[in-house]
Length: 168
Image 1 (cartoon, rainbow, N blue to C red):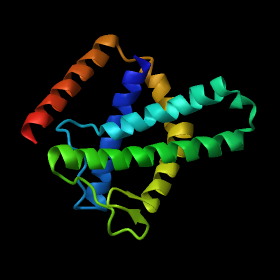
Image 2: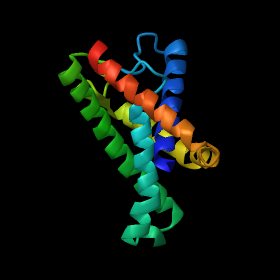
Image 3: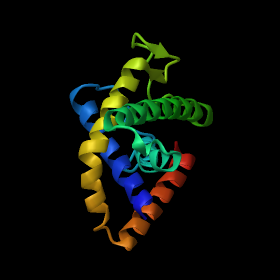
Image 4: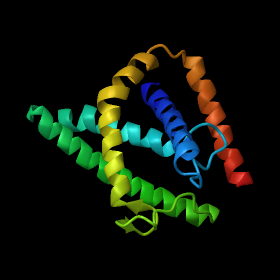
């Protein structure tokens, strides 16, 4: 249940953040393809960061590295994976739905129109905020979520995905 709840909480936090950005900074920004209050790429990103911080270092013997080196490795790995995910998701959405939900062509260091160095650097900042501010708070909150709430949110998410496939 931990990973499922982490996925949904971070997907919802991503939705809140993008809604805030849309309201105050980027009026033309599209904040998600689903109808519900979640953007799954943020949930997947959180799970990847949790995996890297919890398992990669412990299982590979890299846990002996000093804290600064671990942070650098975590951020570089996470930024690389999240940037690839963003590129893949953008291309997949365009291929399957025939729509473009974000376009970084106007940024100086863009690659295609789905990724840009400037955005990847922002991902790096978000990763640090997630690791050191949000994750400890989310971990405490997750322990208090009843199982039936997790299942209810999962069912709503699945319904949202099905509706999106048929209506978008």
